[in-house]
Length: 443
Image: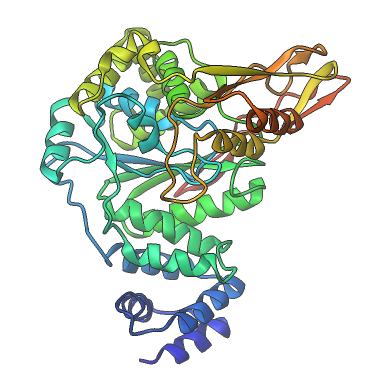
């Protein structure tokens, strides 16, 4: 078998076999296949695409390139959840304890944030004492004991994906649906879950800007999961504006606690109930999504969801009293109000710009090794559709220092808002659901 022959086969629109894809991935991982040859193959994939069978085979090859997590010692059907990333996306902090409270075990490995999207691990580490590095044995024992654990991803989980992604990043082949789908699903499959629910974002604050692109990606990932024997569903949700009102690590933990108490923003609550309902259904504890959603609403109303969050935080060494006293979370010493300069209705918000604003304040990373400030961020006061008077507060910056840098970020936030004379049409949050049976649109 020769790499050049496989590159040519894909260049000419052929379908590579599982053994051919394994040859490419294993050879590249070992260093036997040079960057320039795999770059040529990736560009051929970019233009020619891959069949569902090819994409699944590529995913398995990358998943098998490193550690395989065996969740067998954990009782029940283990359901994982993954988001493609967005602004203000703190759903794992809510969905994980909510689903665990319903009886579905959640054994989750999460990542850190980079750029304008936040990471679940960073948010959890804003809780004093919270440990995101546990031994494999402790991780599984905790799930058996309380139904839930969230830890940082293993450094050797799908290492071929990390190497291939770095190559794609410098060869203009990132935006390939099969390669994106394989990248996401290789880590999910290596993590060992029995079923997977995907939250695919679409819009200005997401990687996929259009619904058609997002549905294509969601279908590719669901097809992979189905092909390798994992029950998989994907919910496509709007990211044309931030999710909820809080952007920033400790700020998002506070909003998550309020949501678990039943006092959260409507959009965040609805998305978490929907994602959680799919997890409960795939976990075999409800016959329909609607039945599961009602079950989860009950867990919020009776306090079991919040109690599970407290148990989860305490089990991993964190200060569980933050659930009753969120003021114990890190707080920035100063706030800066961003005022509207005109009256009207908020017609649009550039979500990505608000994510970048929070990053510039210190809530996110420009490079993977950069430190972050858990306390800083942005809290929105106005969202799309809200009436605004000139001089009203659009958002509040939580800052470490008041000065020129904070003023520049305030201008960025102000510029992210657009206005209209009349109230815009209400936008849908939930757009589509993708399962092995196909695509069903909510709107």
